[in-house]
Figure 1 (cartoon, one colour):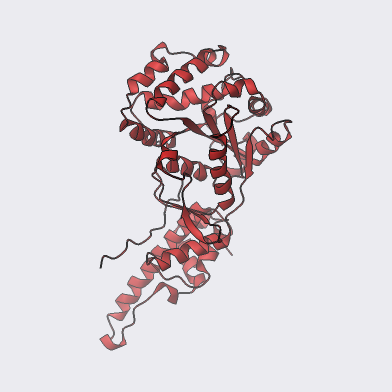
Figure 2 (cartoon, helix red, strand yellow):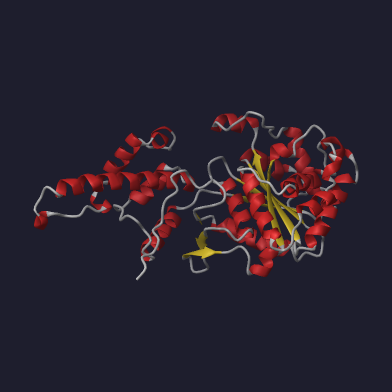
Length: 393
């Protein structure tokens, strides 16, 4: 009988791309977004749509955006959410391959669409233009945007995609300036529509763009985010996005376009206060995953005989509390705990060799005390000792 592959925790967290580890929880968001993508696809009113995800830094909204892209590209390691019976189970955003095949998923950062020329009329189209540009070259860097674009490129390639045709549709050789793209009343819309006409030949019906890094400068400073060469939302830009959502003319130019905007709480509050937007876009506020979701996930791994260690009672919950409810940091903690358990096991087994065979006892992780494991993990891991929340507890 072939032994099942053991689950390995992500020692570097779960925010890289392509995704290597599943995501657990955020059932409410999953249900709302799954409903959203199927609802707007059936609407008689044809407008671009926006789905805003609001959460403070560290909750994992960027990881959710990566998951959406991975679901579209059919490369997701898994998304575990509560089903109708409240059991944790692996779920899919799309009902079938035909639904998924209609979507093209792309990713950009706010810094790429924030220029001195940005305006309401062409805000949607400019973001799409920038998101499509990597596909016109067929060469991709190791950034998140580059890797997501590469997956999209690979999906399109088997359908006969030719990057030169997309480049021609977007008039890349003309080298249109940012100013022209934003201020010309019809240029960027015409280019995006030409690109969409070509993508339709390959079976693409909708384009979904994840727009990341909607943080304010104050929040960036508070949470220690990178600030070099980044542009943040000021009051004018916040109002611009709200008005772009509110006005039907800009949204009507590209009715097959969908945006997922990742927003900080401050920006979310601003969007809420803009009148007449409530019925025009979806807005969901994320909360930390429940302890029960993580505990259930670990139990699923045990039941499937994929857990590499038997942990002491309470360790999983303690690690999740130490991580501040962040699934990425939880993976870092568990990977370090596994390393500590293995070190103890090697030390114990070396001691056991000195004993008679009948006196030898194999060490298991559950034989160690939770406090001892965390103490050792904090001593050997600078990330745990310096960055994880409440590690002294």
